[in-house]
Amino acid sequence: MTQNIYDNPEFFEGYSRLGRSVQGLEGAAEWPALRALLPDMHSARVVDLGCGFGWFCRWSRDQGAAQVLGLDVSERMLARACAETSDPEITFRQADMETLELPAASFDLAYSSLALHYVDRLDRLLTVVHGTLVPGGRFVFSVEHPIYTAPRQPGWVTDDKGGSTWPIDAYLVEGPRRTDWLTKGVIKQHRTLATYLRLLTAAGFTVQHVEEWGPTDEQIAARPELAIERQRPAFLLMAALR
Image (tube, one colour):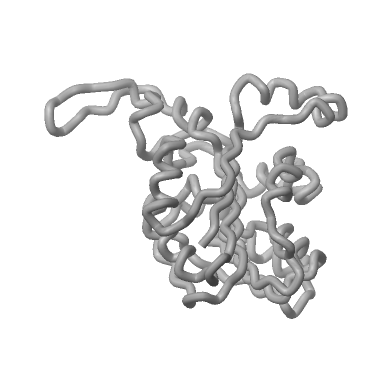
């Protein structure tokens, strides 16, 4: 099962105070770049993987989507999403992305924001997402950039075949990383950029866009604190076609 860190009271309280939690999509610096990857939403059937407070679900309906399904493992996140949503064409459902099943050819767009780096069995999930999209359907998502997820845990990892060891923050050593963010013991899955591309292709997707996100000059002028984000890309944004 996916680590349900968002139902941890300390984590949830801290997360609820973040700009993206208070201001919604507009509070996420990467949102303009992510929005540019989305198709025409008119009459689209949308599934949001890791919907959180439901900001994207509500935005999709405002843009003309016909139906939206928001999925999240967190009861606390879904409770707030439901409380802030009155649209009958938006459905929220608790689901673990490690074991998720979705009906075939049922959605035009699959979307996920900063959730897939929590998923261990990403190859399985991508196969499910590919199957639930109609031909020509689009998958748009963001994850923490692999450069950002790699150096999170001190220590060493040992190769059980030959006994070789590497620093566990080595970029090419994939697997879980334990970090302290808002609370202790948050686990994220580190995988390289090449692995994301390989898994998408293996699932049957055609990759259309890869972006190592950084703030624009205009964003830095409006929010000078974003300048530090040019030291390394914080997010990886991708778009792929079924």
